Length: 139
Image 1 (tube, rainbow, N blue to C red):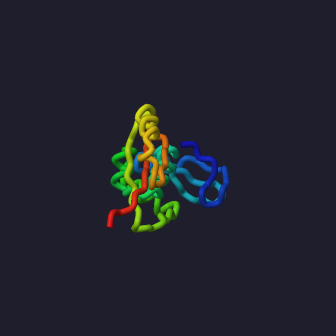
Image 2 (image 1 turned 135 degrees about the vertical axis):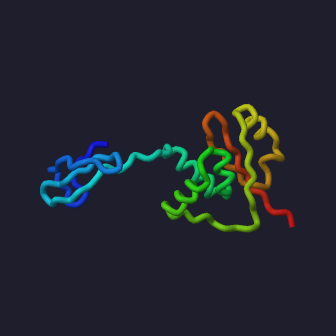
């Protein structure tokens, strides 16, 4: 990773000053602050972050999102906390979802009973589509 400036004072005047825990250490010439390069972690593509948050807002649980996208439910929880996402709560409806290819999706919408009495959202998941439908709880 290329360092552009001292994290303490913002100066671009720094020198190498040893290695700690197999990471290069630097010293700022202006403020004498010692710093190291941040570790490069595994970065998940923003597409999956947006898709996970969208599915969370649609009412899916963390574990369901994990099974669908293949991303840890802990990561989804952390993103919900990080971006302060609040899901509207309504106990009268619950989402059901299906993963369909384009032909199955077209056949699904040709049947009138599939589109009556509930809201439907279709979202892309790679080469397939996810259909989320809200139905009233039977009382």
